[in-house]
Length: 59
Image (cartoon, rainbow, N blue to C red; front, side, top):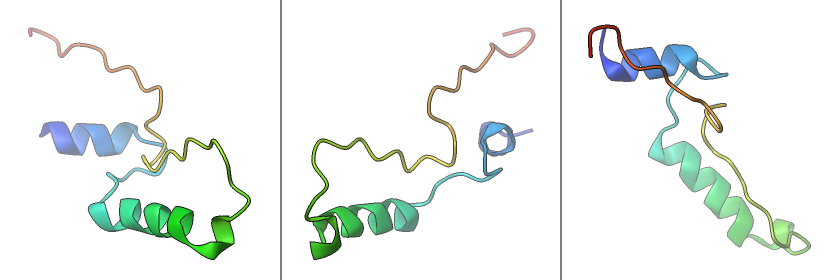
């Protein structure tokens, strides 16, 4: 099993975030709709924030 497949299976959304998804978050923050947003940490990570992977067996 590839590392990418393993990671996507562990994420909350069962997917790895793409550059496009990150761009959508950045576009929002740069838009007038986010005018009142201050000091925010926007996690665009598919639910991976705080994920702690265990070492592979035999590694």
